[in-house]
Length: 133
Image (cartoon, rainbow, N blue to C red):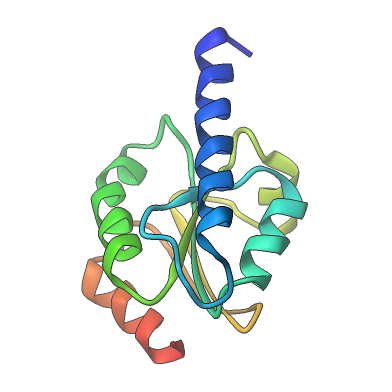
């Protein structure tokens, strides 16, 4: 891991800590939360009513195209939004059968209720979130 990767991890951890301090439960964070590992994933999905999970990779062009949509949904939808880097979290990605990126999962009540593979428009994702909110 490079020094810049360590700095990114430190920033992401600080954001997670800040979000936890703001409260949990149905109060969804207004920015995507970067998750590492199964424990963080389970805790995040279990502590919010509706969660949109974006499985992505830094090298993925379509993932970069989807980023503004994911950020918008985090800011103004009832869902908590999580991002999982499949390269840094290969065992987690494998456990969910992620074979292509971007892959998006919608969770309601801790259970996966929707899956999308590839770039999706904001209206499609917002509809899936609101259907389960």
